[in-house]
Image (cartoon, rainbow, N blue to C red; front, side, top):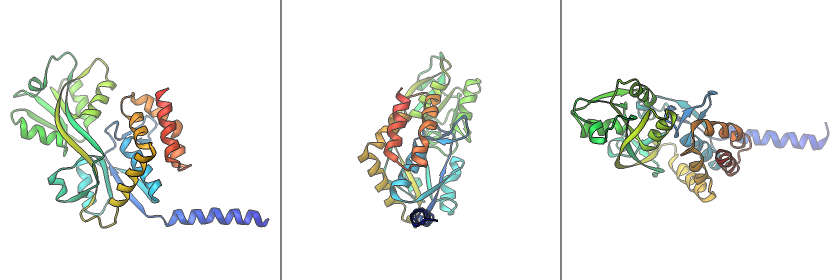
Length: 279
């Protein structure tokens, strides 16, 4: 073997060794909540939260493993050390902040009331006494209905898509969840669902870690988010994920994801992804 080839091989092995030496964190997500996280038709995990987690890991020099986890199990799992980061549209509130620590807010959201199209209901009508209202177990949407509308029958689900299917089947009068996933649910079933109204809750989402941040992850998340915003990648990911139909997003993501996962080029990925979605 020529000396040049030996040097190239040595360089490759050195890079591999560095990669192997990077810390690895387990990210827990409930991957059934588009556009923040969902499973594509081909079985891939994608969504705004997931690609932000992947991009931050690249710019901050660590590795991640994404694990699909029921929403109401994520915080207990992080507390128990079975995961390092919770990334699943968690609203920052006092109750959760007593047991985990949050990153700075990365998203602001309100709650939407989704009904069947043509039902002629506003928020008050949809949440009238005796109506059945669906929400995901452990979410602030479920908590809000329980606290503000005690006379409705609150039906809890493991995932929001299950609640939406029951709404379509007539087994519920409404579903209460965050605005952006509600818009995506309406878009998935054109002419069948509508948003009866928006409840301005002003919730802020954050990524979460174990109390006291024993692994020092929060500074990495803060630094990573700042880098994504400064480069423009953050806004490009928002434009790609929020608004278009899921099928369009999936096709563009599949055509560009290797730029992120193989080339490790965050900005080029975001630029390509957003451009393909816009075509």
